Length: 307
Length: 307
Image (spheres, rainbow over the protein chains, first blue to last red):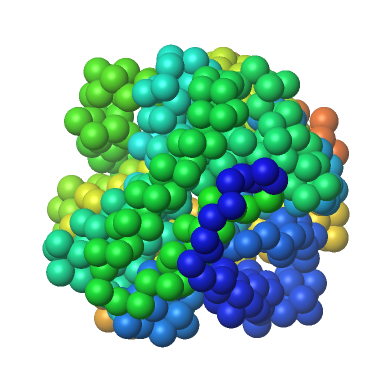
C-alpha cells in the first residue's frame, strides 16, 4: 500500500525462486517437442502464443513461489515441486483470462498489457484459458515427481480448490454480488475465489512432503491467512493503487458495484485488517521448525505490495 | 443418416449402460453433501443449476457408454469405471457450453433446449464450463477406484486428450479454418477436436484393466476409428439431419463457412466414407477375445444415428 505504516520487513522476496519459476514457464510450449517450431508444425502456435502471452506477462508469481518456499521449509529442493507449482500458475492465468472477458469483468488491461481477448480475440482467449487448465493437469501427471500417489494427491488438492467449492464457485458468488451479504459473506466469497488457490500452493507442498499433523495444521492455517491477506490488499490497491504500478485499471470494483473490504469497512479499517492478518500469518510461521524466511518474505510482500 | 443404405445392426445400443450413466450424473451436485440443499447452503446453487442443466440435457452418452462397454469387454463391472466415464461426459459438456458461446459458434439451441448462455447468461455459462472441467478432475481423484496409479493414469489420458494436442487444440484449428487445408488437414483437425475425447473413452478402460499389448493396439485403433466415424456422421447430419431430431440448428457449419466432410467430398462420398469407417471399426472388434457386443452396438449407433 502506498502509504502503509512503516514496518519491519523480515526478509527479501525470494527472487531466486521467482526466477526459477519464470525460467520453467518460459520453457513450456504445450506441444510434444516443447518448442515454437513444434507448435507451428502442429498448427496450434496461435493458441500457444495466446497462452504464453498471458502466462509470461510477469508478476510476482506469488502462488508458485509460495509452493516452492513451502517445499524448501520442509527440506525439499524447489525443483522437486516445480511442475505442480507451475500448474497452479497456469490455473491462475486461465482464471485471469476468463475473468477479464467482456461477459465477465470486461477488463482491457492486465499487468500493463492488453488483456488476452483484446489481443487475440474472445474466441481464442476462451480456448487459451481452457487449454491452460488442461495443460496444468497434464503437467502434474507427466512431469511432477513422487509417483502417482503424489500426482493424484496434488490434483485432488488443485481440483477441490478450483471447482464449485473453490475458485470458480467464488467467482460465481462474486458475480452474483454475494459480498453484499455483509462481512461474513464477503469473507466466505473471497475464501473461495482467491483464498483456495493461494492456500493450495501450500497444500501441494504438504502432499509432496507430509509434515507431522501438528505442523500440517499450522501450515494450513498460514495458507488460509495468506489468502485473506492477499485479498484485503487487492481491494485496497483497487482503490488506492496507482494505475501505472498496478498495470491495470483502478476503481474496477467500484465500477462493477462490487462490495469489497474497503467499501464495507472503509480504507482505514481495511488497512488495519490487513495488518492484523499479516501479524497472524507471521505468528503462525514462528511455530514452524524449518527455515521459514522465504515464507515470511512472501507474507511480507503480500502485505506491502504496490501491485 | 435418414437415408443411409440398409444394413445389419449387430446389436442394440446398451441402454442399460446409458441408464447407469444418467443415474450417476443425476446424483452429482458438486457440493459436499451432494444435494440441492447443500448447494443452496453454499450459495452456489445457481452455478450448479447451470452445470446440471447442460449435463442432464440427455443425449446418447456415447462417450461414457463407450468407456463402460470397453471395461465390460475387459471383464470389469461398469461401476468400476463410472467416475472416469462420468468425468469424460463432464468434459464433453463443458466443451459444448464453451463452443456454443456467442464468441465461438454462437448457437442458441442444443438438444432442443436453449443453450447454457441463452438460459443463464454468458458469464455463468463460462463459469459452468470451467467448473465442469475442475469437477471432472475431482471426480477421478476422489471417486475413481483402483488407487492413485489408476487415477493419475486416467487423468494423464484425459488431460492429453483435452489440451493443446487434443480437444481444445482441435477447436482452435477449427476456428482458424484449418479444415480448408484439404482432406488431410480436415482429418487432422477432427482427430484432435472430436476424435481424442472419443478415443480417451476407450483409453481410460485400458488404464483400469490393461490388456496384453496386441489387444491394447486393437482397442486403440478401434478408438481412433470410432472418433473418425462419429465426426463424418456429424458433418452429414449438419447438412441432412432434421432440426427436430437433432435438437439444434442444422446448416451451422455452412453458415460459419466451415470445411466439413460433406463440403469437401460431397454428400454421397461422405456417406461412403462413413460406411468404410464403420466397417473398419467392426473388423477391429472381431479381433478381440472379450464380449464386444456392446462395443459393436456403440459403433453401429455412431453410424446410424439421426441426432
